[in-house]
Length: 409
Length: 138
Image (cartoon, rainbow over all chains, first blue to last red):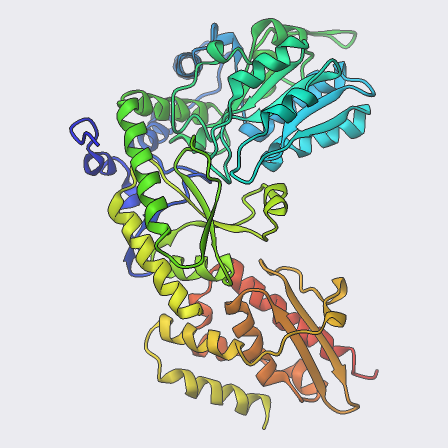
């Protein structure tokens, strides 16, 4: 790895939370798939907002309101540029990935789907990209179809080709699997869906923290993600949609800001994005989210990729030293996420001992129960790395797993 | 031996250990005393809700004392269960109900559990007491 391009020790200085002891040991944070840590610049932007220009936006003519409105709308532009959308009007702020998916299900879905229409998802979806569609199917009589995956944790494209057809109205899939790390061939699948005139939605929650995304190149209709997985705060996220579609789709929640005129006889609605942002939005969250994206933009993305792939391969090789350890998700195209079990040992027990050693990792089904059912296991341990993690932290994890194994055997 | 005496016995056994690793080594070893649960007990109504992994608790009554069977997939909860079984097994339901277990606190075991796991332990204790309550005649 070219360390001159990527100085991880310097980067770690930007993340104050990483420099603490947990249970008497230096913290090793390997739960980045659940949420990333925040650089000082993001934390400062929150303090600065509330101590300098907190105000409600869009309707105020006073100084603070203008500052807040301007920062909020600049944040939208930062997000537009981040995913290479055509227009900032295509960027809708939501509470996160889950809300973005529910918004599409309950606006586009409720209004345009009918009995017998098909929604295609994949076998590796997060519950957030399963349950909203199941609810929609119950409401409309549409049918949910699932593209299967193989034992390596890759989608079976021949099956996708058989499944996607004239009845398909929507293909909704994750860009990257949170439980397995697989990077899915979304562009290829989008092109397949487009042949049949189906819309496409990509859940990018686990993709954007690891590599640049260009929604125009993907040509998806909707792209969704959460700020907190890419250096920003919780409770804020994005729905990208092609502008023409967003203007056709009816609004979801009614309230202030989403209207043009209101009378008791008739209300007319604003255009996108305000049409979908009823009520006072998460102003500070949007601003802090953009600050996280600015931090990300300043990194050398090739060097980030190289560093993260090095962590992935190094950890994979070292985990193989542990007898009885089995990794789930062995695609050649992965982000640095490793799900594993150790034969005969329960993930919760190992997770407990790792926590005692100061190592934060996720245990359980990772909100993807169908994947666990597919592999016939109750859950896994998951190490998910970020660019601020190091090889020596991986060594600590391996040593601690060996201690856990000794205690539990 | 009373419930309190059994608690004191456990506290004494754990006193010889200095750190969490040794203490939980003891807990894990203690869990090996639990015999494998027969299939007839592995039913929905015996599942203890509020635990992160699957835990079963069932009981029987010989007219005077309560007897427990239990199971946990994971070893640390199984160890905690076996300690609970040790103090409650073969006790009168009234004694189980009025006991104010504090050996998890006194031994420092409780301090080492995350909030979720501590809640799981609480669910196990509550369930064992509820089982005992079934055998008290009004």
